[in-house]
Amino acid sequence: MNAPVVVVGSGLAGLSAAWAISPADVVLVTANALGEGTASAWAQGGIAAALGADDHPGLHARDTFTAGAGAGDLDTISRITNLAPGVVRELVSIGVDFDRRVDGSFDLALEGGHGRNRIAHVGDRSGAAITAALAAHVRTLPGVHVREHTELLRLLVDDLGAVSGVEVSSARGAEVIEARRVILATGGLGALFAHTTNPLSATGRGIAIAGRVGARLDDLHLVQFHPTALDVGLDPMPLLTEALRGAGATLLADGRRFVDELRPRDVVSAAVWDQLQEGRKVSLDARGLPEVTSRFPRVAALVAQAGLSLSEDLLPVRPAVHYSMGGVTVDECSRTSVPGLWAVGEVARTGLHGANRLASNSLLEAVVTGRAAGLDATDQEQRESQLWPAVVAPADPLIIKHLDGPAGHDDQVLATVRALLTKSCGVLREGEELFAAVEQLADLTDDNAGYVGWLIARSAFLHGASIGAHRRIDDRTLAGAA
Image (cartoon, rainbow, N blue to C red; front, top):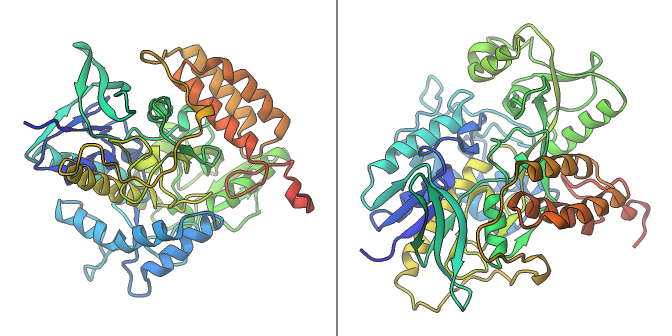
């Protein structure tokens, strides 16, 4: 066979890429079993799409742009929101059983930042249901070769800087897979923070590996905090879905309501943080919601594991890192600045989310970008080998940290990164603290966790103006200074 496309990662974005590539040959490399251990499978809410009679993709686009603090790319937002209804229907065609009303229409939920009910869901386990259905479908497709329990170590490039293969590690040891086309779908970086709702494997490995071969990276300071992580001492922190607040659950500080719960996540997280800093106890109150445990069984089970009841108890919450809006910069076909390399899902910076992701846009983005990359990578085989039509600008040479071999992995480095980022890059940030973190992390960049931690802190330090999820308490623009 011709050299296959290599897809790294089997969350919804990676699975969507393989789906689009078939029946051409694709090697799907995944660190766990297919579809497992991914943030996609943990998503509770669903997929945002303008499916209601009172809705339109233009309204979805407007809400996305507004939630992103006006920092999103309008063309990208329009393109992805226009595709959203079709994405939901394609998923139905492969067996995703979205919840329906009696008349057969989609049972659309409301979440923060949305002006309409537009979240297509499967109970409160949408990510797990969608990922499982697509994983099962991908296993049946011709041309797909799945390599489970195989971890990406590094990308290989030729003398011209184009992708030439990947080095991976599995039970059989380290090996090289030759490939001129690689799609990164390695997920986010939330586990680099001490308070996170992400799988602990989400340490930004794909960002580090792409950055080391010269891929452009942008907006790494834009890290979203989810306002309602269950604060019971668990790592990662259980997520209390936005849909609870959409259904009417309220946030209380020492028993008193203090915020409009359906504002965008950055606004609600900042409000919760303010209350915590004042020494108040913040809780989510879902006790008044009808049939709450049957409507949200997965959340009820998570809460019960902590010894609490969703229907009877106030639930202690705090903001926790949930999603990265930044990452490997890509164009509309998911091409990076490195010839032969595509990036999809949370590892990518597409411009959809701006400075703050609108709820339930991530699974949508994963499917759209994954399919775009898969189709483009298949087309790339037909092009002249030296032609790389990406429009992404070159990377900043100051942030490229080349290594001769795979990066190190040290649990102590990871612990240091988590402590430093939590202290310096939390809900509120300050210049001197950020500079100190940059200085300390600069010595750790031979480790992938240290490298990405340094990139996040450096980006946050260099962006002195507050926007969306990036809030600088020393923002001089607020006082009218240049």
